[in-house]
Image (cartoon, one colour):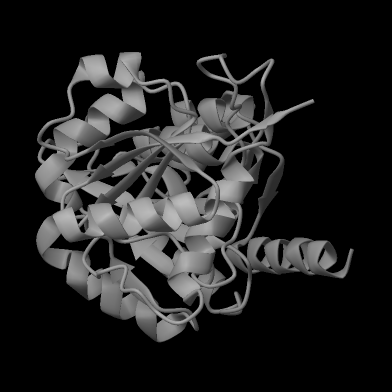
Amino acid sequence: MAVVNPRVGLVVDDPLQQHQLKVLLQEHGYQLGLLISPEQLTPQHIVDAAVHLWLLCLADVSRHEEVLESLLSDAEVPVLIEDGSEQWADEEGPSPRHRRLIKQLNKALPVLSESDAHVENPILSRAQEVSEETQVACNVWVLGVSLGGPEAVCEFLSMVPADLPVAFVYAQHIDEQFNETLLLAVSKQSSMPAKVLRSGDRLRHGELGLMPVRQRLKLLPLGQVMIVDEPWPGPFSPSIDCLMSDVAHHYGRYSGGIIFSGMGDDGAEGSKQMTLAGGRVWLQSFDSCANSAMPEATAAVGNYERIATPAELAAALVDEYKQVDNA
């Protein structure tokens, strides 16, 4: 059976990097199905291009949000996104960046035979995997919090080691002016680095990302995040429901969520979506909450597998991932 090299659609906003990536891909046996700038890419290109994967290399993701939205919604093959702020300089031997890209391509693309090379969409989506060089997350847990929750989250984080193979995303109902204060508070209690997420950041194991309050955050492939100029849907900002649904969509059974103390029912609908995707939902025990409305609302719809104090939840999570490492 003859082997056919996979075809890659290359979207790059820098002419020099277009050439560098073209040479790199061809040296490793990939065919170029299309080489184009993001300004030239049209919806018809996405439909008509006979490629097995799209590779975007953009210096500024926020300048090309429409292109990203079109590819992520209309492309039926994997979409990889690379940082275009640095040149793919020619070097003696493969650089770590070169090796990482080729490793990602090899994971995303199968070996194709002539009999299936004509199929437009032969690639099935797969769970995110950790890159050895970048520690891009494959396990992502949402921490959903409202009134009375920061103290519980700080207690939880104080017991989580920085080397746990999990990325945490923290959605706290709060006024925007207090987000930096919240960041300082959790940073003092956590052994892992924490920051308010911005466009172009990536979710990484051993890191904590706080949600922006006014602007919505969307997840992209390979753990990259994009901040869009629109409010979070629904009555809560940030929306725990929206974040849990987005994480569940991208990470499936490698996703999880913990609903801590808070008023309202934010997180109840998101827990449904996470459970349907194969993810897991845990709750802070009602008697340990300053306000138990949020975990009670999630419990009422039945989409949870564990309920415990913040300290017990942290111990259980650490124990589970230690068992995975030792397996």
